[in-house]
Image (cartoon, rainbow, N blue to C red):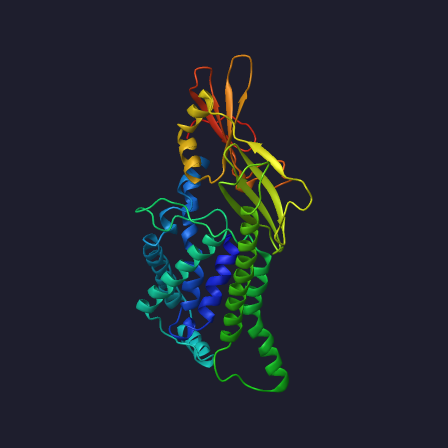
Length: 353
């Protein structure tokens, strides 16, 4: 998922009760819930290197404890600076008025950071990009496929869960009552329950879409495997991909009905060519083919000098009606099938990375 959902989830987790056990729980869990994406710094070494390492070791069960430790170190540094330059007595008095702990319990904070880090893995697992949680023991990708890369309904329930206490506080002020305990727990719990409800409905509809895809014959051929991928907001509509021995079928699935508009697209599997084989042997090709679930390689002869461009496509990101494929790199080859450059998006001169 994108960062906003991770931050909101960490904040809701903290306010659901963890912040009543130790000071700095909200700060720690909010940061830890997004910290795994620190691997984005790999893109500084180029798009292919970044692609190869995104959702890598920081998105694994082994990596999360180390990510949590790094977050805890950052929080400790922030706390030391605040204690040195801030008004600690005033801060503690404010926390006491709200019924919250004033001193951090670092052992608990580390445990809470691990929990928030695991929430990052769970959220990323729900979309179709996937994660490799058991690396380095297994490099297999795992994905639930039930949520789009961003889901506005998750924003609604998470932001609502965090905002409800402020609304309740205004109501209490109007009627003159005083809070006897920290605000925020009920709203945060409701927000997290809302997330589970969205996932539950999504999972039910996803299973229905996959079952419908499996029961269909595509141009006289049985499917070898099928997948259904989510759209934002719309629970009933899915983008389906069915693989047969000779081709891929791309279809819309609406409320369990496969291809209701009759707009099925057939993408035949191209035969391997010397150019496509050479492109797959490059660093980019190896990385992409390891990640892709429905790979399709298109070879283009660029000019009379028999120079080639091989485009890598994963059909799970080529939604029907789309004129371009997200995460679709290219490899340029010379007439001797030696790689001369790689690029993502529009053509531009780049060195092999």
